Structure formats: C-alpha cells, structure tokens
Image (cartoon, rainbow, N blue to C red):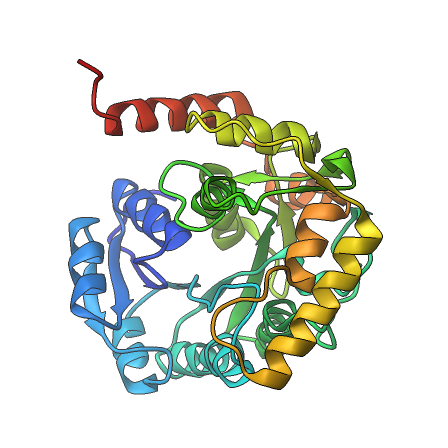
Length: 336
C-alpha cells in the first residue's frame, strides 16, 4: 500500500501485534490513529507515531471519532489469557468487537480487518492441517477460545456492501517484543513449573510477528470481502524443538521433566473445577487451554492466503530467533 494520505484506525495499538502494526503503517506513509485506554497506552502509541484516541472498547463514540475519515480499521485489541472471569472475556472480546464494528460502520469505514486466532477452533481435539473450513468453536470450555470464536462470528456476519470485513488468523505469535508467550515460558522454567507433556514431540505451526503484520496488510489490500485467512511461518515445527530454541535465545535451558498427557488432561479439568468452585485468585496450576496449546498438534494449511493474497512468510524462524538472541544480549549487562 503506497502513501496517498490514507488513514488507519487501530485498536490494541499498545500491544505486541498492534504496536508492530502501527510501526508498519507509519513506515508505509499512513496517518494512524490508535485507541488508548490509559495514559501509558497513549504514550506508547504516540512514541510509535500514532495519534492516540482516548477511550476503550466500550466507548463507541471514541472509536467512531477515531475511525472518522479512515480507510481501514484494524481490530487487534483482545483480552488474552488461559483463565479468568467469563464476563470480562465476553465484555472485551465479544462486546468490544461488536462495538468496534458498529463504530467503524457508523464512521463510514470501507474495510475492517480483524486479528483472529486458531484458538477460536480449539475445543479439546488436535488441529491437524486445518484450513479455513474448520468450524469455529464458540462452545469451547476455554473462555479465550469461545469468546474469540464469537468475536470472529460477529465480524463475519457484519460483512456487507459498503462495509467489508476480513479476518486474518495467526497461530502462536512470537518474536522480539513478545510480552506473553516467551516471558511465560521463562517464568515457568525459573519457578520450576515447566514440564513437557507427552515429551513435546508433536508438530505445531507458528507465526513470527512480522509475518502476522505482513498478513494483515495483505488482508487489508487484497482480501475478499468476508474472507478468512490463516497465516503462519510456513512449514510446521516440532513443538519441543521450537520451545527449546525459543528459551535458548534467553539463555534458559528447559528441564527434561515430563508429564503423561492423561495426567495433564485430568489435572487441567480438575484444577479448573476447583478454582471455579472455590473462587480462588490467580490461574490454576494447569488449564485446559494450556494443555491444548502445549500437548496437542496444531498444524495449519495456509494455501488460501497464498492463493488469494499472495502471502509468503517474510521472516524465517532462524531470522526471528537471531533477532531474539541479539535483543537479549543487548539487554543483558556485561559480566566484568
């Protein structure tokens, strides 16, 4: 997309994906506005080159103002996590998406690009070479999965003449600046809570954040109205090998401890029941979503994105890992 004075409005701009998206849009010459629910978020998106629009996903007026005159809306905001309050997940992921859709449509925006996820398909079974025909699972027992599925349904239902929606679904987003996956893995190892489930020998698809942004930009430019597109790093990788290399970029060797899948599966269901019944704070020791993400194959067919968008990964795993190693080395004080 070339610079012709166009405007984009971004939700979730202070997050991992949203922040990288703002940088890309600004670099491509777009004028960017970004929803900011706090002073900290406003400062962050300003530093990235966007104009902050104060408000949150419940503030349709703020979003409508942010989207006024915009050519595109990118909806990257979401409530993440493997555990939490149902009302909060529904309020942000489902209600917030509906509010963003309504605000964009009211502002006369032509195209709405939604950051989806393969998690919207997760309900307890492995995903093996799945494509966009696989059904969403709003009935999933994992709140993140269920609410992201419902959010995507709302986006797809909103597609209409004069208001086009496109969904781009990455899987296991990683890279420099990640504030969720890599920090959580490092913390689990350091707290001696890390264990492979079933040895970790299953295959998984992954998506470097630069590939996510490339897919979002292609979806905005070339996606068919109502289209849904998976984007990944290309060929799947063995989960254990990927996580071991990811931790290695931080100088953290994973332990050899292993938990049999049946034990982990039963522990996840039991832990969730206890935490829900007793209303305990924090996350259970293991959750269903954590089990699904770390113990089951999840491989994605990106043929549709290749065919319709011309998508190919722009960042290899080797390049992404080297970037993480350099970032860690720069942040680590030199030993005297």
